Image (cartoon, rainbow, N blue to C red; front, side, top):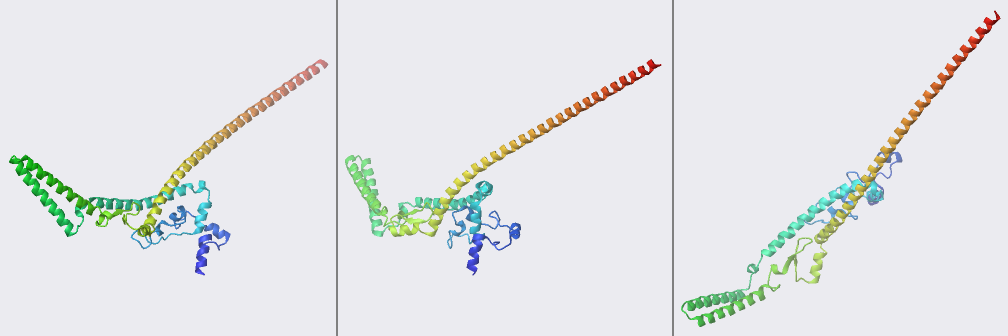
Length: 312
């Protein structure tokens, strides 16, 4: 029963049984703080869950990984979620980058350690080392005698001893190289550092053990993080371009709105000016009519008076 409830919560949200009014008041959204941003931007995983029970385990993620939020996030238009997605993508990149930087530091440290380990650090069997020491003693002896004979003027004998010393040196070097460069005889000579996870791996190992390393939890986890880092950086760049485009469109609409507002204002000013001109014209016509009427009355009155005077 609890498992069924959990599945329903993941797919439809924990407020699925609330009334429409209640859901509108308390509507869960993928941008809520309790929603896991790793799960939103990843390919259906949480980056905190890829190293369980390993030295790289960050512990269980306490955020929500509901399928409901994932679908809500993916179904929303790219324009609407762009700014939020850009912000959380940067946060996730920072988290993964720190993980990668830490392991790359380990890789570099192990490689430096490996390079410092020269052939003198390799433990040789006693019989091999005794032979090498014997060759070195003979070389030293022949060189010293050659020098003495040279000082005494016995050049031919001195050169012969020098040649013998060189032969012993060649035999010594052949013995050292044949032993130390044989992977089965050297400790670190048969190991190398994995560039993906920083672990030591056997260079001459059998295919089965090499495959075990590649399929291991840590190697697989860091391979995934490296792949995701590349994908998310590309995503971040595309979101950046999208936001620039949206800002340009917003600015264009803003300028267009201002232009329309100015046009409306100019139109209103013209309308008021026309109204004022029309009102003035009407007033002028009214005055003209009023003045004409008064003049007619005066003329009429004057004619009346003239008529009365004539009758007298």
